[in-house]
Amino acid sequence: MGRESVPALLRVLSGERLDPPPVWIMRQAGRYLPEYRELRTRAKSFLDFCYSPALATEAVMQPLRRFPLDAAILFSDILVVPDALGRKVWFVEGEGPRLNPLIEDESWRFDDAQRALQRLAPVYEAVERIKAAIPKEIALIGFAGAPWTVATYMLQGRGGDKDVARRTVYQRPHDVDALLDVLVEMTAQHLAAQVRAGADCLQIFESWAEGLSPVLFEELILLPTKKLVARVRELGVTTPIIGFPRGAGAQIAAYAQQTGVTGLGVDTQTSASFAIASVPKGMPLQGNLDPQTLVVGGQALEDAAKDVLFSFKGAPHIFNLGHGITPDATPENLARLIQVVKGGV
Image (tube, rainbow, N blue to C red):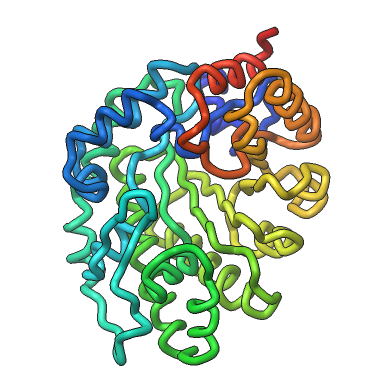
């Protein structure tokens, strides 16, 4: 197969520099699209939406119909993993996810990983459907939350301030270690199943990497992620893996060098020059436009996008945001952004 027949995203993840770079947008299927908002009304809950292969596939296809994007990403949620492990998960409108907090339980028990995988069968069916529906030049990204990020939600029952989860690390260290081990195994199986169903590459979302001391960063982020990547490889997965440790700051160097990820997602607060200097030479980088520019639009959006393009000239680069697109962004602004990235005037 010639290089030109390989999806652009996968070429960059193999270390190639492309101009213009491939582009996709975190949360590209979502509430900023009116057709998504209508689609969402067809499921009684957000998790029901995620577990409906037909609805999940349609959500993925909506932005691809509007925009010349270079990748599709599975429509799901990082909290399907604790849900499958037997921890009740629900979503409060306007507030986000809720779980029964583990910190309120004296002992922590979880369902068997193989049984949990069976519960996630609709997710893998969605991957198969999406893969069959998208053109061959568009890469399909599977994903999961990193162990510490998912553990944070499980420990305190919600997102937001992570103080409760961090305190639990000191109060119940052995329990937290055991929880992270459960999540490493379950997440590895979940990612491998997505690849078997057709995912071309994977992304690990470490949404809560900020605010950790170097000691805790190693214990909660580096070691579990390294175990996770190694376990995914043990399961026979050879596809590229993008790690996105949002808020890691100066610790992205250790993350890029020690975890085994193929590429690094760069958040908005991190400069391209710092990222390029921190990672192993030639590591693909993804990011890092400020999502707020897609709300504002106009010259501010165009200038910011061009600055990102220029700043990452020294590396294999996938254009993306430094965090997910927000519901108050507009489809028109995203269309303009992609024009700018792809060389339109």
